[in-house]
Length: 556
Image 1 (cartoon, rainbow, N blue to C red):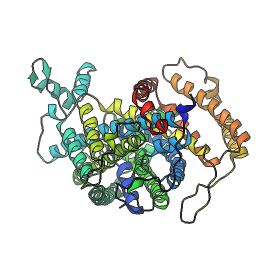
Image 2: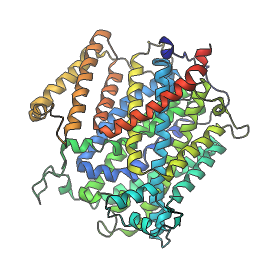
Image 3: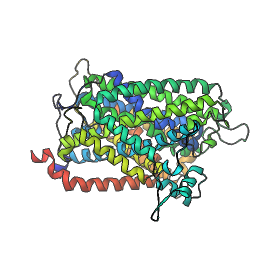
Image 4: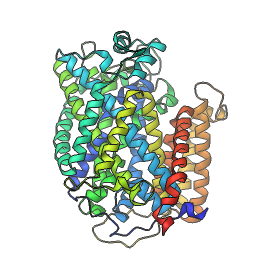
């Protein structure tokens, strides 16, 4: 049993020499902005606003808060272990091999499945943009078979999906429905990642500058059309709640759409071996990009909810162009500009995620947990060539038969789980020598502070919302039952953490990061947990069938 939790010891020299170190601080910041400001703002933000109303800005603050403390934990690991692998590498050093495999398997889910959602979003904006300039692609070539089939079964009012099903040609008895733009952009991004990180860096930086410029323009133009009545707690017109129309449960139900926006900063730690002076550069880049993106997201959410009533965002996949349509602000030139830049923005997300996945496989292969073929470095381009091609295939094939909603929830729960283990991992690290120029996570003794913060906050919330605690154990309620059960276990786990913190003098910053990420998991439904569990059962079968016996630590 102890062999399952054998730890790998890393040193400053335990890095690959096959990858080129070409990335500086602002390259990391730009890659962070590229990954974080993309599908989360240009696609999933609309669904989040519909579920939570203007109050979804609170969820962005919660996610930003949780990710901020998590980023500090990532930065601490990056300063100690400057190798590719992200949370997988960090878990290997903290918890041992089995947990490292579980995290690596979660990251495969995060990057691969995340890019499937992003490819679908890119396709939506691309076909929408072409439509606005008078070009039309047949509907059955712009969506997946699963989406069109589900639309027919559920009586959807989405005209494009219904038309795709009704007009699709038959191959035998099967309708030919394929999202061609999603497949094409996946192929092009895979090629770009294959030919080199330097080329990817230059391409990414230029697109990020363009994207930021237009997002600032959206915020400035949009604020001129804001109706502050949309932000009031109670609607003056109807007398019903308008800031959090579905209560805080409704806000938390949007956690998948909101948190999806933040998963990109995890990809930055995968680039350790291609970063110059990673112990110093990587932490700075991660923290700067996270702060900038949180501010941008809050501003965008305020603009969207201020310009348009939250109820109009039901089923809207292009919210930033939607707010400028004729039925809303009626600013035609902005509608066209946003549609074009959304294509640019989502392209940068595809690029960063598609760069991250091969480097996870590369790190796992180096440890013997995956086949050695994934270690192959292209002699000319100095990229993990085989792993990059496999990533393109793994993303491309599911595009044929999956849909966006399933992928969004599936990706978010895996990422939050990885963040939980990173924060917990920092709590297990021994003290290190302070070296000038490197990032050092400040140690604040959480023995007293953390229990006071959590238990004090719990008491304050009880006096503010006593009815919530009176119904806390009513898990059979069809609307709020799952959330109440999740909150119960969240409180129980945190009370245990308070006791451990008191006994072990645990550090406050990773404790808060851990607690915040655990709270985000309370927004996940039982369907999310079911598919999450199925994914890990498959992963464990592969580990015990291949990874355990081929592990380099096992052979040593």
